Image 1: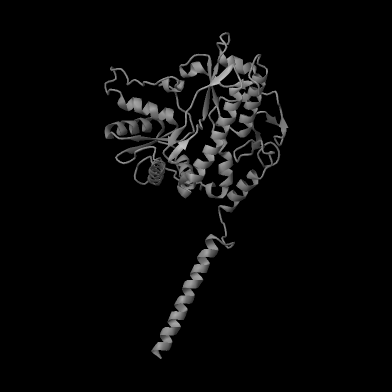
Image 2 (image 1 turned 90 degrees about the horizontal axis):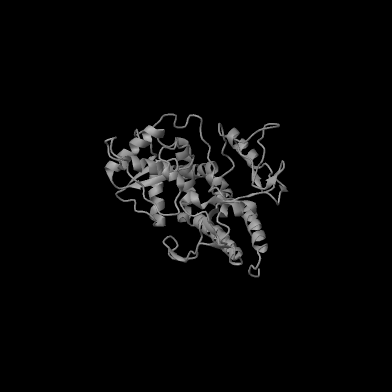
Length: 374
């Protein structure tokens, strides 16, 4: 009798476990998940993502709405029309800004894992539960990322978040300056080329970027935190949440997918640009030798985000104007404390931006008198 009861009990227990496992599988990977308050947000996001922009633009949730209830396409440089299908071959190529649109295809390939739904009541306070302005979980992921990449020491360091590197630099200047207001502020020493914005210490920072800094000295860290609290009350909680979501995707397979994609894209662009400029006597590029990559643990060819272009003709002392006349907008060398013979060209933007810039550069090279054979 007891054995029969025991057997029946075991059958019921096993059956219950199996049913629970099936229920969990159904909830998380099956079709049985019934969305409630997120359903409308997900539908809206999918609808906007599905708007056709011919591959030369994007529609965004916060984009301009003209007719109906869907936002319009925002076209890449040199493209126009309702669906961004109209190409203007004579337009000016934008090689000035550093917007990392080259990564857009990667995030589109990882659309499901990188998507984020934020509740209207998410983190409505100024601080987290521990009264800090920094997400402890995000900090943990940042330390993990640096440990995998091997590009920074995090042990014994404190992490500080900022709205861009400029804000963090000014926080460091504030922290390292004497407490006595009559004493001169700490000085920043940089080599050419440098970013001019770093000199503007009184600049009002409105950047939407997210950056972080490793600080070893506790006193310096606390002074930097004090500056950040006075300046912006820390980085937006929504920005930290989005960064955490993206870092979780990046850390899958120990960041290999992202770094593989980034290296292949940028090295290909650099190689293509270098071949074009190598045919020229009018222009030249900085020489970048192969170096050992700590992440891939091997020697790798150059894959810079920016090209440092020089106008070689004696009479062409303002390279920015030379390129502007050829329908290319770069950033003048004087912005970085260098001669006007230099121009910085961004390689970080969309493939359309890069292709248009290369198209105009090829024209300039082909129009050279006495240029090398293409």
